[in-house]
Image (cartoon, rainbow, N blue to C red):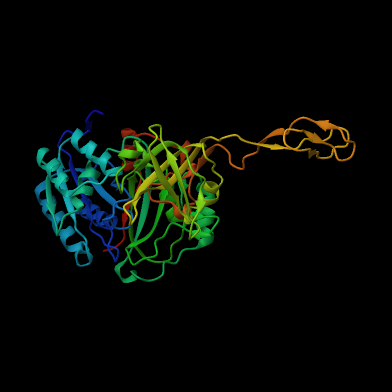
Length: 456
């Protein structure tokens, strides 16, 4: 892959990446982005050369909060040193340091993204990377960075800058609450969500779970996000938000370009024996044990790859793929997307994220023949003695072979929306994948109100 160059900009671009500003108890990295965009536009009069990027990283990392999302802002303007100082100050003041946030922020001035950063991002999608590796990459490429507390967020900060997102991508318009409303119940009209979901489908996704009759656009915790609308373009996501008719007075909204809903973490195929804990990817394999239901309704079975390496696969009940998994048979050929979990006994397990059934084994069984005259099932006369009709006494030599009709069909199976991770590609998106078009992005940025700040 060649270096990404933003040719339309004569002066150097400032790429700003940051991560790990929140905790499980509060704050939000995208809300910090919302505040930074406000300052950058109003105070520093910068221009954005891309939407703010919301980059979800490897969801299997043990040290993470909620969606493991990092943010990158790509701007051109003046007073970069002053901008950097203000951003560092805001991150230090805003981050939930008391509850375990370990922020990192990186600044890179260049119109090209080096291959080191692009590769770093690719590894951050499916592997475990250390802060020490991130610091080496930053030093080698003369990237300024600032660590707060343990500074684990530097990994996400660099990875977000390195994510050029030039292949499949989506958008999310996120609405934010005013401070006085934090912790109160979010009031959203279920009927409107369902109606707008039907009207905008398939150009928005994961808004409403039809099976569970549950709204999916809003979190339930004390964080500043009121709701988020995910879709294929910013016009559609913003229209959805505005048509919701939210009664609560909001702080504003911001639209991100993102790798959400793209399976970005599942593009790496590995030999099973080389798989490490907490990584992600996909494998082509064959079922080698009959799936077994275990406590909690979960399902376990074993697979082997082309090297005859064998590993267990876990299918968890919330995915609603357990019934499908129980219908698998030994020798079925499948592809599965996975995240690697490490059990207490140090056993690595592939947690199923999607399943593609490629070839189903033919199951053959035999039955006593029917009498062609009486249409009655014959009876065995003993070992190797054939079969006889109990009515007309006609004789038949052997059993009849049948092929059992499988309840499964070849094809793609994914979890129900309620169990989707941020990166999970919904069924609706398999025909809507797209690539980066700089002219299209520029047009959106100029002609669409992709941000709105309502607070004073």
